[in-house]
Length: 568
Ligand SMILES: Cc1cc2nc3c(=O)[nH]c(=O)nc-3n(C[C@H](O)[C@H](O)[C@H](O)COP(=O)(O)OP(=O)(O)OC[C@H]3O[C@@H](n4cnc5c(N)ncnc54)[C@H](O)[C@@H]3O)c2cc1C
Ligand code: SF4
Ligand code: SF4
Ligand code: SF4
Image: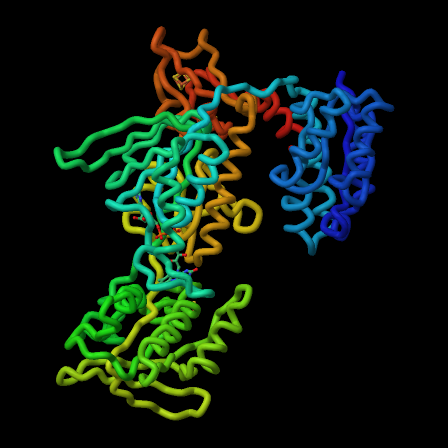
């Protein structure tokens, strides 16, 4: 007989607003192996955890069910509370009565209450059969691989190296620095982009802990968190040379790529040399002889900037806002007015997105102090007629239709994910979103992690960002890696698949089925073996095995049948 404690959480009104929690407590308390059942407003709070701990002591509980939110939220919290009182952490289970009962059946409180009682009782049936387990301990390689040598990758590499951890920095192009190399200057303080980079570049090149491989790409990543093996191919004058590195973590900082001008044909993209994108304009501002337009080398006297040129346009361009271009245009228009004081600069915008400390003021100054004309409205068409650029637009505030013949048009085109990032995502076993940027594990709580343990994101690989944000993310990703490396050994959940070698026929069906590559045939005898570091306890192998030779620890067939039996 077990002595199970059941703790039903109100989650404020999230659960108690729909369910009759007292009824759930009564249903649980009626189970012969439940020695104690109670409810509380917030089980995850300190008093809630104290309630669990006191009950364990006073009622000599040896297993616990917390009926509350999803285990993804607080299972670790409750397991820790149990372990503090000597109840094995794996004898504590969450029964999800919020996402699976109260939230989804708000309009049927009685049925939701019955369902919650069933969920709780089925988890009681499971937990009383749970074995006491200890986490699996795995060794750890304290070296990282940083992919991409832009500002975010450089920051991550330096932070890790300064903390004493060796870094392999792989950059696809022949030089480090990313897009910042091409900037004339950078907002807010207009510091020279190249100068801002120089400090980091020289520190990286001199750092004993950083090995840089330029003109190189990651071809393969095998293994798992703490113990990856990366195959890197580098282009050298004699041909391709391959290197293999053992690393414990990977940071992906592959940045962004420019949008091809030809993809905005309605704005004249690709039709005339004096219709350029903002990245080209950065380089034009850097010309030693001063700003000259591409077609005839003359100083442009009238420059029109078009914002959202392809962004926020799901029909013709990309659906997302590229986030940095409102500020980039303000910077460039100011720079133009400084270089060509007699020239005129006009900006067509839909709305200005300048969220950031001092950013709004910076854009306002462009208009008020630098004389840049901001026109709210859409540019319908830009075309080249007899070598002359014609721009038709509308000033929606005055209602005027405008036809301009500027010397130069600068299109603030979207930031795209770096070319080849989808293939890289496959190699790293991480996912990308519908726009092709790499997906973070959680948009609010885990912004630099991916769903593959040990692989982290930084900078524009995850979505458009400016330099301060990219630097912050590079630092955050490095901090996550340091957190990983600070552990003596890697602790892995022991609830993984196991194989009964006496029954296994070595048919291999489970090896093909395992989505995480965690299974293989033993080298010594024809039976399946599991790499516990890779197993995610999905159970697919247990389902496919024709001999019932494999199951997941603490999710065995007896437990599952007992859970089903309780609710049927
Ligand atoms: C015109 C323009 C001007 C801008 N000006 C400013 C400004 O003034 N201030 C500001 O804060 N922000 C500015 N930004 C935003 C700025 O460009 C980004 O914030 C910054 O570049 C992000 O850095 P990153 O390291 O994430 O990416 P990137 O700078 O794009 O660097 C990524 C690096 O990864 C490499 N790479 C890509 N794929 C691979 C691969 N598979 N393997 C290995 N290496 C790979 C690339 O070659 C590159 O070196 C501007 C943006 C634009 C479009
Ligand atoms: S940052 Fe500004 S210009 Fe760029 S897409 Fe967003 S709103 Fe448009
Ligand atoms: S439980 Fe899932 S991840 Fe683990 S070995 Fe079986 S199929 Fe692979
Ligand atoms: S499916 Fe079953 S019998 Fe076949 S190899 Fe896997 S564990 Fe062994």
